Every structure is written in C-alpha cells, then in structure tokens.
Length: 76
Image (cartoon, rainbow, N blue to C red; front, side, top):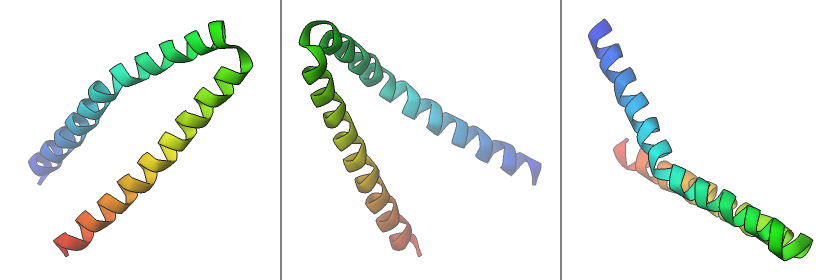
C-alpha cells in the first residue's frame, strides 16, 4: 500500500532528523574545542584531540553495531 510506504518513509526521516538534532550540539562543541586546540595548544594538542575523536568514533561504531545485532537477534 502506498500509504504504508509514505508512513514508513516519514518515520525514517523523523528518526534521522532526531539523531541529527541530538548530535548537532556535540559537533558544534567539538569544532570549537578543535579550534581552541589549534589556536592555543599547537600541533601536539591537535594530534591528541584527533586521536581521542578517532578512538571515540571507533568505540561508538562497535557498540552501535553490537547493540543493533543484539536487537535484531532478539526480534527473530
């Protein structure tokens, strides 16, 4: 049914918009902290900052993958 597809599409768009709205403040703060590290801390502070960001991203991706896999397994 087309109505079901439209409803499902709206639900998906709403979920992604909600995720973007939740993550936006963190992105803004991260950009500001990166700017401060570049301006006042020099190259060493920027490298440490980037390593922390990369590590946090890897942890987030792995935990998200494990949580999603567990969620999908419990539904089957």
